[in-house]
Image (cartoon, rainbow, N blue to C red; front, side, top):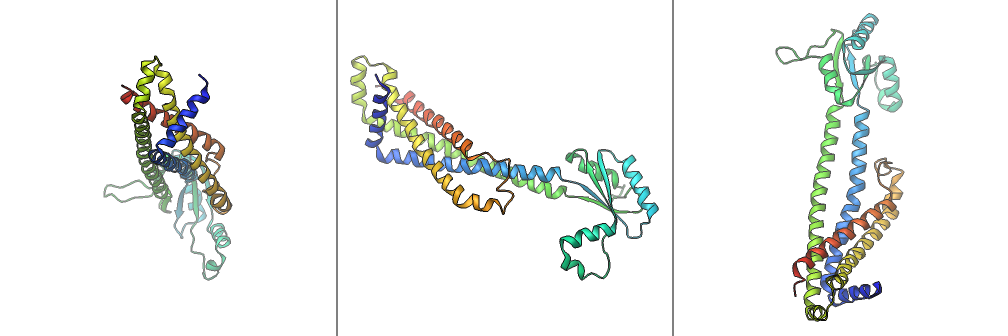
Amino acid sequence: MRPTFFIKEAFRSISRNAIPSFAAMASVLVTVLVIGVFIPVVQATTGAANDVRERLIVNVYLKKSAKQADVERVNQLLQSRVDHVDKVKFISKDEAYAEQKKLNPEAYELLGSNPLPDTFRITPDDPDNIQKILDQIQPRGVAGGVLPIDSSIDEAVSGKKEKDKILKITSFVKIAMGLLTTLLVIASILLISNTIRLSLFARRREVEVMQLVGATDSFIRWPFVLEGIALGALGVLGAIALLGVAKIALIDPLASDFALISAPQTIGFAALAVLLLGASVLVSGLGSSLSLRRFLRV
């Protein structure tokens, strides 16, 4: 029997059960849309969080009364007594003032004097060691307060809290989108399974006659399997078309203004389309198989 026969039978069954077939296609379409948005969003947010993580530093601020001898002494302490230090850079108060004034000239023109302290910028050997560096520079005393390793040090700070917030948000996005995707995939499988079941029920007499005349199980099963795959393919093609329109009309024009959108870590659209198409075929085939396994008993 030619493959075109099974394909014709599959689409004939879809036209016979238009309403449940449309519901199954719509479910696949919505599921693929969510996954199609979920993958780049998670990749972009994860990439941004990792980028922030890699750029974490420890700023050691000296007191305004610190002299050149204090600067040299603190530099020696940071180099010799603090572990997990990759690089130490000294930024004088004048350099810090010039740097900040360049970023915000109007605000700094109003200042009568330089309010910025001398600063040491410490790059850790690993971003995960930020807290260890902070604990060594300003260890906690018996009463719970911090006591810097040198009296000329005012405080040591880092962007660890901001990094942790970003990672928490990223984790929340992953979990929420993952749960939503899982629910939609299950709904798609059940709808496709139910559609195949209705199609099988409508043709139960025809199937029974085919079995009586010696038709094999695979001959009976293939049109229904192809029907489920066709429903999934139609749904994913519609979703890919909508994603393509959104990319051209919304995402691409904003890519030059938002670094998160143009992040190089995100998957290409062609690769995403192939991935979604393959996943939808697997899900649709699974839905069809579940239905046939339970209800092809005539």
